[in-house]
Length: 634
Image (tube, rainbow, N blue to C red; front, top):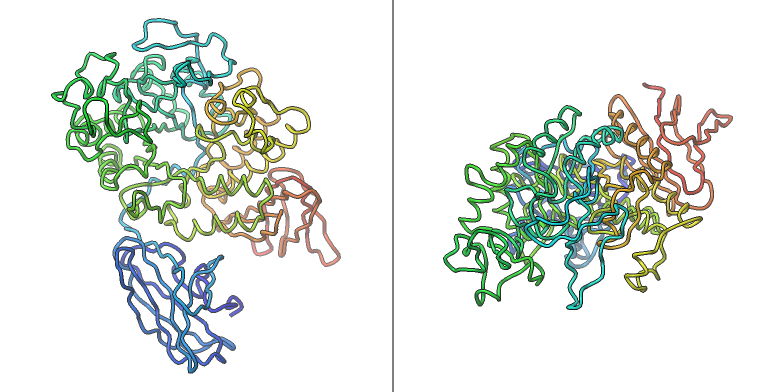
């Protein structure tokens, strides 16, 4: 058995079946292969549920040998949904040893019980809304995507400064009191999005993901003023219904951003500036919204999100709040799904209780059986701990997906000099820890409204961050540094569009938009000034992704990760796609075994055939390619 190269590897089925996360109640088989000359007398499997203090030791049975290695095996049924940690103990005539986790899923033999292997157990009865991962997503920051007219300057509930010029730099300097108000608006609207549905179709978009569209004081609208009103500058509920209806005709769905850990200071619910007709919690303890909030000294001392006074936190499990957001007949969740939305992205999901998310999911599924719930989580979401609580996102009935920040971080690091091995390890860790349906349903990002745009990061210097905000507001990549950044963006996009999950375009990335931190990463879409080379590249990528069974559903296998070279395949029974990325500054060659034919799909690599008819692909410096492999046995 050629794969038996070490004592244990959690990522190979010779050692663990099934691979990765396991359904509750399913049979699991685990084997270790110590060398025979080690003289193992006894082997034990050590397993501990995440909520248990003491592990269980289970005797492993000798199961013959493979070459010069013994095989010890244990079979068991996976327990209830949750996280489990496991390791091994071997006893020889001379000493006792533990086999614990090492990078790459390999076992490390030690004298003490170190890091244990993770096994995710999930409720197999829960069906992930997997339509999301099979299509391309377009992320719209509503105020900055498209407007059909310049908004009027007056008549708004709160003070709004309107940009006449669509290409202005967003306001970024604080006022005389040191506050940044975020109340400058460009006027992007729902009708503007409707007018660009043909454009989104040209990118092969299947899901439109909106940052918040509800009434709010700020242009980012994460300080919700009224969850049941579309912001009047964005349009009306009828406009939203029209968008959802027309998007459906284009084969697209719409998902919304739900900000449920806090509301706005300036809102119907808190109403600290008295801009609403309601009696808010700030105004009276008799307010029907008072119980939503946590006041330490009413009205001016209260819990707020990250200490920002304009974002008062809510008690998510408060009955009145639950009824309004989730459980009522016309709750916020149900209302907008009934209006045409297909799902929700949950802002700061790690600040929402598991029980809240589970209730939200159930309410969404009561309206639409395939409603999607995506969480904003920046780390490995399978073992995330927030506020000293281990989260249960993927164990069943909570999240269908998360924003794939590990992919973003891995891609950016690799293309900026980190070894390809590190990217592979990040992805293989997720593939092992996440239920397969979730791994294939991730929101694959390289830019967001919370991060600098990828093009800017690829072309900027680290010293830019020590400069003033005024410097970064006006800093613009040009010439050679822009061309270098574009080459990296193309490589990043190829990875983003070929990994399992939904490639998610942050509006304007595909047009060459630039920007450092907020608000520079929230500049308007550059209509009429697009970088056509980047735009055509994204359109081609979208076409390739959408037309390939392997890139949508195929198994992932890394073939080579060697410093600057990253090569992996996506394969189904009917199709094999090979993705080849060379971040380096010199050409390299990759030999493809048993290939009858190599068909370039993206890029035009040189293909060489040697005297033994072995085909090799030339990977030019700073290039990425997608090729289809036709094998002899096909």
